Image 1: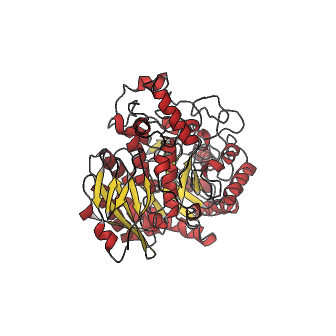
Image 2 (image 1 turned 180 degrees about the horizontal axis):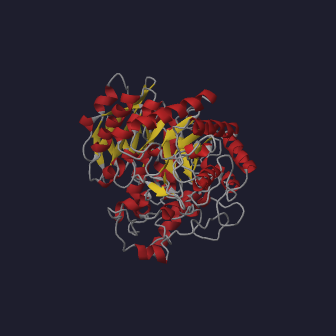
Image 3 (image 1 turned 90 degrees about the vertical axis):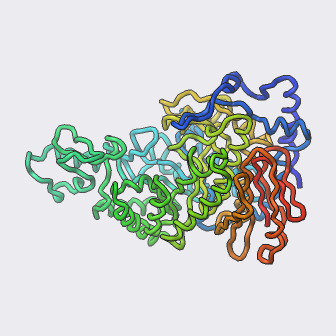
Length: 587
């Protein structure tokens, strides 16, 4: 069954507009951006808009009735609901920049609740939602900064975002739609304005010279790492000869997570949030719990994991250990469900290198096997947490340049979302949003509309630079079957339709792969699918007749595809022909 209607009509209109405009939909800023260059190794985002809409334009000229979307294999909606377990497709939301519900320019929980149907409407028979079944909220607790990683109260909602009642309403609305909610849990440090630190600081300021602190007189001095010697990452406590550890910023003092009193505090804090209906915790900066000591960090995570799972066994726990694979794999010894897979992320990660062609398509398959081996060494129940970008990284649309940049941006999203485990998608990546450099730029307002004054549009962080987006806003992309938005939606639909993709163990079929094409077999519960990626701008042919004929896989059929133009994949007599930057799923 083909989708027809306003999306294809929009494509026809675009063709008509091409006759009168070589820039096709680009505003003045986008035209100026066409002279830019690719993101440099230092992390600067590209200003290039050359090639914007190229696939759509070329395809429409070749065949005015088709879009990439209309050519993709249709997934039975009843099969696209995913599975009800810890394997999820998580959507990372920075509430501050997502949707403004009260008109003050700052995103809030009522606004997010209003837009839940955009993320998942709870009805697998529709194609009006994105298809994510989990939401990760960046910090929502009171803080002094816009980013809110400096918590001042662990059992409250920041007033910029709303009330606790607003949070409860949000959680209930998520659960009605089958969406699980995970909150960012900042346990490594507090704000310097947190009452714990303020009390300890005042006590030390009044402590007579030469006298040692008495934890019975002030228990909070043991909540942090205080010392009379300045160690690495330590800051001086004003008005004293004391120093305190603050690895990230002087206003975010590090907690002593080996303290039983601190652990008791977090025991009670997790009680609070679990009672509010929270389904998971994203543990910020786990590598710095005890900086430089992997063993201590694993012990802390073991305590936290056991403590939480005893209360609610299906609570999902994922940690941020920003390091190499060999390091973060070790953290699975703690029993946690997941640790973010940094090897595949960012502009120099496995995915971007394969898409750019700097390491070849086979590098992706080989890296997946290395990943499975590494994680499996430490856990037999691990759930990988692949992601491509997050709030600390330049956005993916800035990784590529030239006339293939849109196609490469799409393919990279597929290579992330079709990995095994719980996948993570940063808000706005489904639109190809842009932003790099300082953190504020990476957390720009969700691009609902090109009209900055449109309902719900946020102002973004105060120190954010002016950003000219490369691709259209949601308002335009949702009517364009060739858009990044529809491509990402289809990738998520395929992920949900075939649980072998998210749950499966991957086998890299090296004899069928090369620098241009990567072929994987993903198996789960006596079922398997074949996933093929073409990482080049040219059409590629792959002979899969041996796989199609073997008894294990049976006769393969083309079950799904992701296209970056209007040329479809073909499957005949065991031979797959895959268009530029195309993806095919066979079962």
